[in-house]
Image 1 (tube, rainbow, N blue to C red):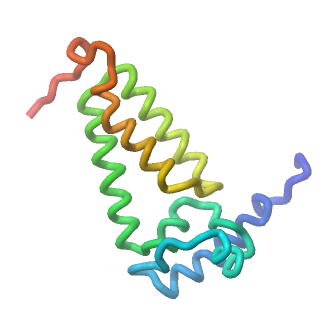
Image 2: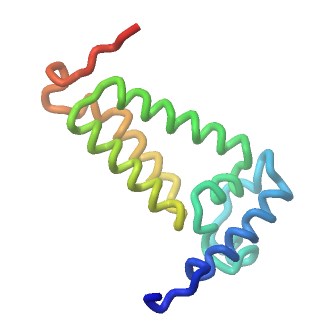
Length: 135
């Protein structure tokens, strides 16, 4: 179909090799590595999946910290709903959906999360659209 094979252009093989790398160092990973290291290990420039990429970089330690950052960002954006925060949350969801098949730069990911976290302050009239916090 559309000149593609059913292995998502051989990504399933890369994911299998990435999984085997993660099994060898699951707690702390291998540290931040460049594309040459990935080419030696996986024959490609990245693991083609954000979760595998983070697990290779820092194992469970980095992945848990990454989840904490995501939850803090989304929680604050949901508490202070404006049109801009809703657009930001939609872009975060779209971006993370795209990262199922690709791994993007960590600086780009954190830039998007920071913009989402502070999107309430960037809104033109935040007081009129702020949701009330219920205790």
